[in-house]
Image (cartoon, protein in one colour):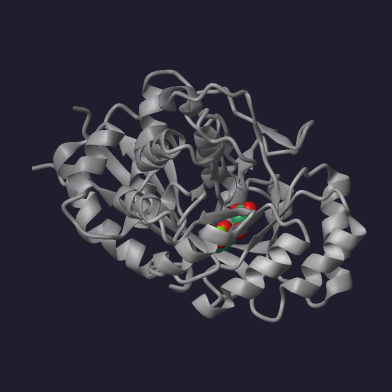
Amino acid sequence: MVAVRRVRLDELELPLVEPFETSFGVERRRRFLVVQIEAEDGETGLGECVATQHPLYSSESVATARWMIETYLLPLLWKEGALPPDTFRTRARVWRGHPMAKGAIEMALWDLWARRHRQSLARALGGRRRRVEVGVSVGIQSDVPTLVRRVGEYLAEGYGRIKVKVRPGWDERPVAALRKEFPELRLWVDANQGYPASAAGAIRRWATRYGVEQVEQPFPERALAAHARLVRRAPFLVCLDESITDLAAFEAAVEMQAVTSLNVKAGRVGGLGSGRELGARSAGAGLPAWVGGMLETGIGRAHNVALASLTPFTLPADLSASGRYYRQDLVEPAFELGPGSTLSVPRGQGLGVEVVESVYRKYVHRHREFRRKTP
Ligand code: OSB
Ligand code: MG
């Protein structure tokens, strides 16, 4: 086993090109952790932690992820070395929860693993696609005309499906306006748990009437029964995101028939290994799966694109071009939208993209470096 020599744990803050508003609030800047693991032989691996500054999407935050990594996960690396990612996943399971913290380390270990084997991360994971189909996730806007204009711009850029954020009071009106303006639009909505179960009837009516293809996470994380009631009467896909915290949660949702489409975010479920397994189980259960996003920079996006190159992920991913999120991405080459609403899967070793140190340094808020204590 190759020992781990050094770990960098940086906190960065990047301004978004435009504020991103959802049912749980507005993000103007993205605050997140980046982990870099350096093995004794000099090989390195990078992971971006998807935990947000405040615990709104899930109970994790930048601070809890940092604490989890420093208190439990780094000591494991000092003791066990640069573990194969799946072994790390098994070892880290003894501690409850904290999937985003675990995922950041697991993803860095995947990058390291792929680089050591001189192959791309996509290939190391078993991905076959050279391009992945993507769409764009559009936040809540100040008014309906602004939303229609923004969506028009994204369509003009070449995005083939649009997901709009909805919440009580911002749903039927914007969705109706989009359908009127763009009759052929492939339209998804995401409520980020914003509705009470009693809203099911209304959601079913407007989503059906305006040809919404998929409704994502309308009800709270634990409200599987409410999702199951919607599934029974919905002509559209009912997607779960926040509810699916691990494989057991997925099994329960399938058993209860509370899900007909699955948003897979590696960070939400503890890493790429679990994400890959969820994709496979979803395909096994006959449900379409797709890769979601958390407004990552190019580091996390490279992990997500590699995951999306696996064949079980059949619906377009929430992975857009670098420029949709940040004026300057942390990596080169930046991700650009290609023909047919796709991003190309990097083919270089590991992530297949390189961090631009000058840009990276500009956005580092807090830098910490840990070294293995040699006896
Ligand atoms: O619910 O899918 C979500 C971003 C942050 C937190 C939650 C979500 C999102 C997105 C953005 O929808 C997807 C992306 O990164 O493009
Ligand atoms: Mg979502």
